[in-house]
Image 1 (cartoon, one colour):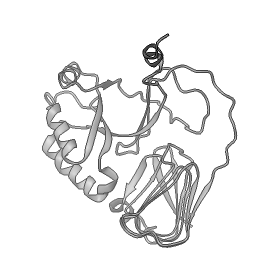
Image 2 (image 1 turned 90 degrees about the horizontal axis):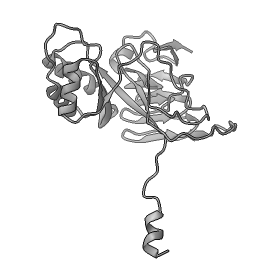
Image 3 (image 1 turned 135 degrees about the vertical axis):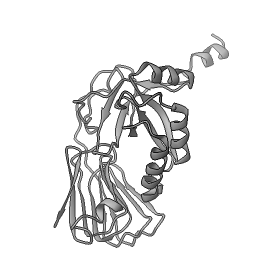
Image 4 (image 1 turned 90 degrees about the vertical axis):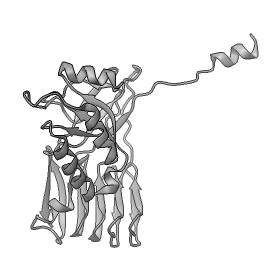
Length: 269
């Protein structure tokens, strides 16, 4: 066998299962000017959170009788505000036809009783595409499990969850990520800073930046801080921004943030 034949047998690609956190923008009305204004307001509350965000555009909840949707116009609005549309979710023939013309992938409509996927499960990746949605009341957070090659399930192996410890102040523009475990910060967190953890987040000081716990989908993750002043708090993709948090009586207090279904609960410590 020649060297060229051997080289030709060397695999160029590999199909793998993957879990991607994807934001869902679910349209409730066919009103592009209002969409543009409201989306601009939402993005302005946490610009870094939405910058280059992968997006699934959900059209399957649009009411009938509001006319034909300008799909290209919606895509342009999303792109203008930093949202990158990967696919649409639709069930109306006209929307499916437009998606085909614009060469946009189409996902099946969302089921009403979809369950969150627990990523800590070590079972084999699904052999068919599945969409798992985590609504937050205002439409956020969906995980898309890509089509994967079937493989045998391997025995679950208990893994230690490492803890990342930060003892110095976290300045604006700094991002700290605790992969596979918890994040503990023993200092103040400034506006513009970003804390991310696969597990829990503990801040023993004022928290004025963004805190995202359970970023790979762990709905049991928690956030604890001694003084809530955050720009955004999020658990498993379900989030509240500063505008919502300031209306809470717990603003400026020591709090505990947890997730119940699709609702973020903020309680005083």
